[in-house]
Length: 409
Image (cartoon, rainbow, N blue to C red; front, side):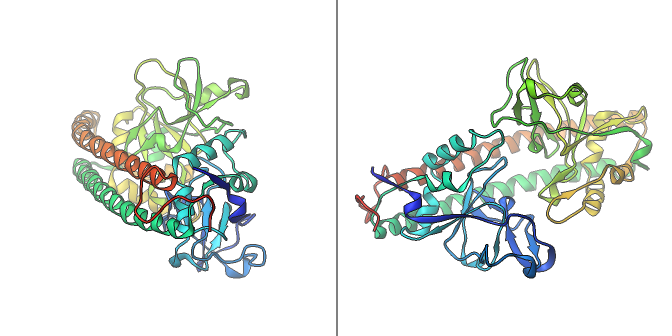
């Protein structure tokens, strides 16, 4: 299939250079945190003072433009601007304005496997994941008649909507299972006396985020820094890390190494709901040396509090509600160590702590197995969606009414 370069079909420009003043009820600013698998989501939406946005350089977004994540863990992800988001300000990412191509078709092309592979190759050339306008403008776009592009986009709109509905249903199932598990944990904590965290945690340390590669550390002898999602829903995922060049390690790097039994807690996140998520470190066998980053805290319990119980207590609804209350900021929610020290946490006697931990582990084992099965189904649905988009835009899937052509109309 013949292709043409994106720069002949669309303009690629940059968004805002620096954050405008925030204002409740102000104009939406669409950032990387609002771009997810081709869709714009409201989570962690920033609103800015319209008078502080440089509209002459960054005009309001219009229906059909495409935003591309410029840097960070999700570099290369993109989403089309719908009518709902017209008038919003572009964030700090890249903006694609279609000129001689169907916007929906182009948006799907940018989500296809060849495009994502191209973005991965581009971003890997820099020390930190990064894309620039010239690289995005150099993306190869399959050539297809303009009316055929619309037919392909119509098909993908319908079929991806069906897949997305199935994913949403599975996500809801997952949420309900997690909520039932949380209720069970809460009931175990209900009668325990409360105590201020600073009286039972001997240390609260913040990690260090080194310059890291896009790939993960997997082998003994390698060093990796954990990603934020290594701590998720009470579970620890050691494979979610980024490899570090040992030559780039600072002299005192070993004080950031995690060990079995460490309690890690999310210090900051783009989502207020994720701030304060915690998990007990459990390392299975030999593997890479892992460090905790500056977006995680390591909490060291004192003699009166077992690490395993502390992990369960920090997941309770009461403690999570306290954390949400003190989480700072709208654009980048976080919790300060001083706030952590003032949390009221349950503290039963040591024997009761052990009993509660045993019950929580049984609950986690049951709900965890079900959630793992649901997660596998969701992953397969995402793979199906990706394969469908790729096949349709590259011509491998024969779409009635969409013959290939040698040029874009």
